[in-house]
Length: 127
Image (cartoon, rainbow, N blue to C red; front, side):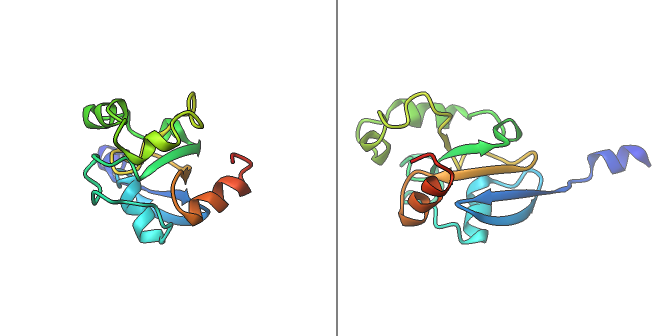
């Protein structure tokens, strides 16, 4: 019985661009952002190619799954992607792709693109 309770998914709090939502553990951060209407950009539709869903985890970064091979590749080959426009600005920050990060616990993140992301970054003193 305790084994079943340990493996049962739990609800965790996500805050993306200031929008809060409770999701099941294992939910993709990008999907949580869509459900919360957090206005993350997503040109490629969440396939990990465009980098427009780039976020900075403000808290709970350890509660995201490690970067996937696709995420590492997409972040390394950035020259023709929107992230190239702001790469210097966020160098040294733990930038993640929301479409490649899955939630394992409470997390707060802010996007790097879009009007709502800009105001969320400013509100957190990150701009």
